[in-house]
Image (tube, rainbow, N blue to C red; front, side):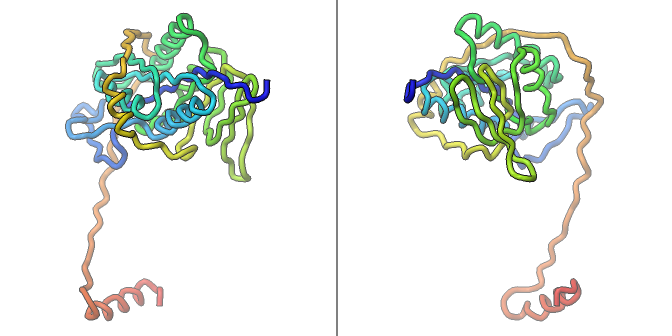
Length: 262
């Protein structure tokens, strides 16, 4: 029926990652990031996915469940999602001190989705970030979609709800590609699809009361093995002050001449 309001069920999977711009050090055994002096945030693509999901249910009605696999500290990212529109929150604890490989991560997420859907009904849309800001593996969302037997498109920068499914857009060199996916579907969202909102005071207060469900799930390790993390050599640049005020003008002219600009 035209104008009928659709109640959507959306799941967004997010990841706790070091804040962009942080100076990254690795542990002495080269197996993990040294987190001693790092701040953490939600991976940017996934922050946009949470925002997009919130906008969809504001238009269509429904709920947004936000799920993460990570240490107990990742509760911080779930509470942030609560402050900007999330309505349900699931933490799959991984307190081993290092990320699980993509196969293992995808397997536990698939288990969790199966358990949640068996109890509460099927998700119309499952959203991932296009890739995580730290590992950049591009794998977990695709593996989950394959395991669930659902259509998926990555690199999405536009989503519209249509009767029985979704229209998704992604940018290409010549313009954009448009996909129609029947629900239930999976999408990998790319940063830039929207501008994530800042939490309001009401949202921040609500996030403190949000109930976070912990699901103890595990799966066998996959076929990928981390050899070591390598931190690129830092490039140090030197700044020379040519002067201040009008007396610096001759030195600037000489420099521009040396660079071939004049």
